[in-house]
Image (cartoon, rainbow, N blue to C red; front, side):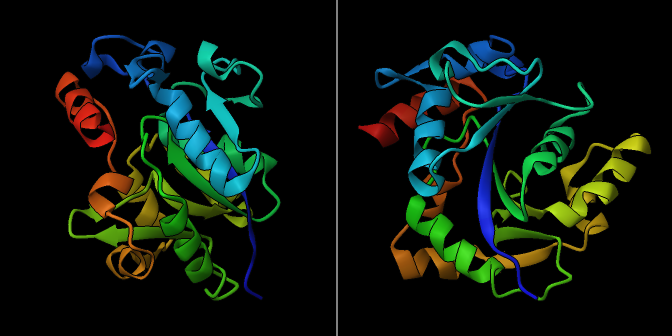
Length: 206
């Protein structure tokens, strides 16, 4: 039977070294009067209600104080470990996004949810794809994938591209979904890694 997407997680465990500050410092970077991570959280909250925040130490960054936070596990294994941590709390499907994506689009997420909920019951992973490729950190993972992700991590693997193949990810046509809801995928999938990205984000915001 198809499953229901009811949970969401924001991955906030990255180091952010290319932006010049590590850990939660990156997510505290000001973007139009709000912290970068807070902007992503509020966008996700608008779509899901109460997303969880996955961090390296189980403590939310200062701007997200009071949010439900859980520990990345195993620590230091990259985003796949954060996905595994999120799935341990999920009921079925969980939407997972990176905390450095300040322009998450509720309309696009809802379109993608409808596509995911129509997938065959044995599907455990679904990723949007557009002209720039797959978006594994704006994607859907199912509780049933947890054991396989743990196996993937135990083998010392970290690549999310590899993980998508390992899980047999269904590909979601993000271009078509964006057209239906009027979203701009360039903006919706934008993430901030560098100072130049931050400058671009400020231009988008204003």
